[in-house]
Length: 111
Image (cartoon, rainbow, N blue to C red; front, side, top):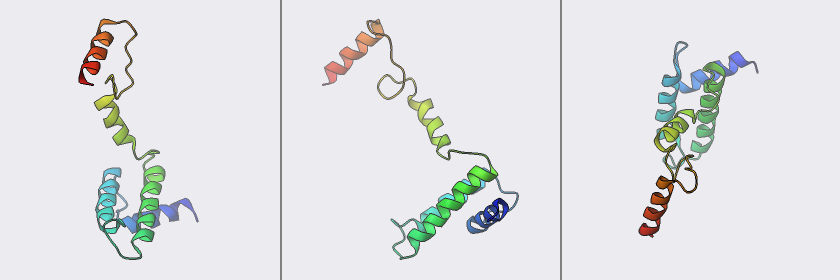
């Protein structure tokens, strides 16, 4: 199949118009997932339908909008939230610094 036909089929499956945006795709995907997710919908075709919806969503996000990783928004939020946190993030103060010693004491006192 050609790329254009695949994108058109994905738009049709999700109900996205030609001038739809990435935000429209995300919104429609979430709406359809609430209906077709196998944990919610116990019908036999729910699993296959959810797989089709997932494929259509990923195809549109990659091909049409150039968003390669659709978890990017979540990752940005996570790093904004925890990126400099000494426990959850990637910030590691140098050994022997005053702040590092205080944090170790605080953690030890909690145990």
